[in-house]
Length: 294
Image 1: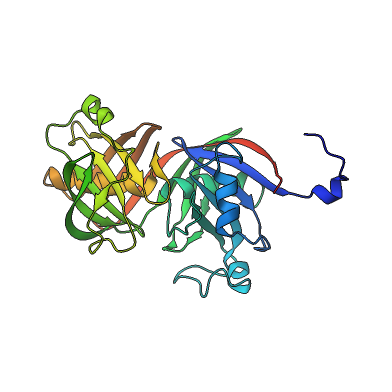
Image 2: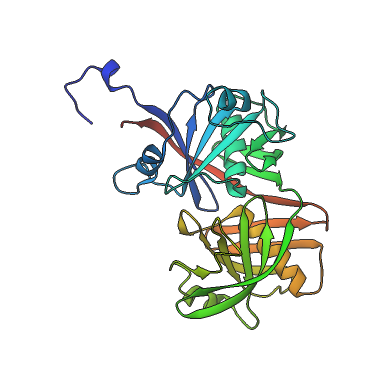
């Protein structure tokens, strides 16, 4: 890039870019929450032609700084002022409560930037604490396990893609999901479904919108899944949706606990469900760093 302006006048935003099973994020190190991260800036960062391109933005800041700047009114229970807080925004600029793949990438970025050592890391989210553990770290790749909390079963509902209705289990993972396990569906038929289209759903049941997953039945401990995320469209992976799908697939098989490998277009992630809690284990990769000029 060339410019006649002096470097000081071109000060931009330092960023990292990373993904968890191709669910990709712009990561903004902003410890003191000094950046005005409004919806326009988020959309500009996530624009895949005019910006960096991503499914969402992860701001790195402390919980106390976000409260002091008025980004958060109060910290969620269990999150301390000194804890690193994942201030997550969807690609359309809307605020999201939680992102499982995002926590993996966020924890990886904390270690890679020297903010915390590898190991177990307290991570704050709008849904409360989501502790993460960096299990392995090699250059720009990591494997991270996230404690995802207890899934909340909300009932049953339906969603529609391309004129076809799918029944599913509504699951609260700190954000709302409708996980639809379709009898007889295989991976090839799943790939042909119009999950990229905006789904129709019961707005009375999901007044804040919903992430919709369509999945194959559990077979030999594995399911395949696609997801349409509110605020982002179809993504290659969704961590909270992966856990919700594991819950629905086990329930469809008459179980409430176990280990499930969930195959998404971006790769594979492991879910462990105890009946009380859930954990998500999968890869994180940091692919770029630079400066974004507004």
